[in-house]
Image (cartoon, rainbow over all chains, first blue to last red; front, side):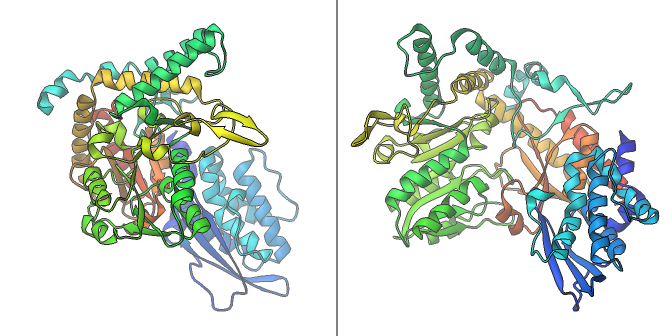
Length: 155
Length: 420
């Protein structure tokens, strides 16, 4: 049972949770969306700078638990430099990974990225924490589509 | 009788045997035993004693029927048992009559009933309703819905750093514009017990009725609606070791009889025609449709259960647990308890420095410890104390000092886990 905990709170997650990357509000961003988990009050703003279909910068601000903060932080690192289409595929890949025992990963997501995402897959053993892991990803996807907020029943 | 003597008489191990779920373990895996359940979430919903479970089962097996309708044997039997619980609830609250007791779906519905029926009828634009910062969303949102419809004004009584209601501020807020006061009798986050009698007396000086949300208060001590002179008092069965799906509204009869129906349907009418329908007197007027009959029988058994144990004895036991747990938790570095009002109920909300409550909840759960994490449906209060979400351990009549120890041990494990 403690193995499940170690699986959920891997070192890399604890590290991203304590020292989130790209935790800022960029001046240049041109898309943003809010993600909010009404159950626990976690709240993130995700900021994207999208130019010519390319996600040049991703950043976030807000407050949340170790899982949601780490997931948001890793999301910013993985999505930056991707095309909007690739970013959306990553979102779907991540969602599959967090919710399905046999995830159906969309084509075109490279192995190295998948390996990094796999760190979060321990959340599958903790169904109530899936929303934490996917919060910022939903916000990112909403921002990509020009929506102001991810609807809370999506997570 | 002193607390010590009461506590000797209170055999918590014997009490625990009445609650089948308390003997289970959680997180058992193939070949590996689980952890004994340490249930510290009774503030969200209490576990049920065998006496309640059996009363409901027996009723469904032997006496079940719809009520207030049939001329047949079972309908009469079921109606008699159902109405006997109304009388029992009236006695439980020391209400002057069982005609003052309305069965609802929940505390939430009871408050919505008052907001919709009393509020819509007697409140107008510019009238003020006074709430407190400590309210559960169930005693905020119904008034906001009324605010949107009737343009009433909501005023909020603050509390101090300990979580004590600011009675001076309350006095200042009371004015000729005040038309209703709706305040919790015991905070579900801080455990603060509010001075209900003084709150009501001050409002009554201005002829203003007062509603108390007693969802937590009835569980932890004796409530006498006549002594505090409540105009409305609400509570819910499931926090009182009874079933879900059932709440209670106590209302002074002279208020209830001036109020229009809340919902329309069967059982609340005298006669129906398409030219016009006349309604029954309270409480039937507010009980449209088939009520949760079996649940009412369950509430009756729950009241019998807590009265047999003795409400003072339960309160003394819970007070001992609260003091012990407070002492033990205070020794955890970086732990801040939110809510330290004197005479508070057995509810401990706290934050662990640098560790999010959600992470705390997940980890202590692996040790079998069930706590609530989040904002406990009292978002404005979480903002007031600047801590955001918290962890809440709430104690009930079946909890033990060993369980408080288990909580502390699991919290130390959390800290080790996060290297804090």
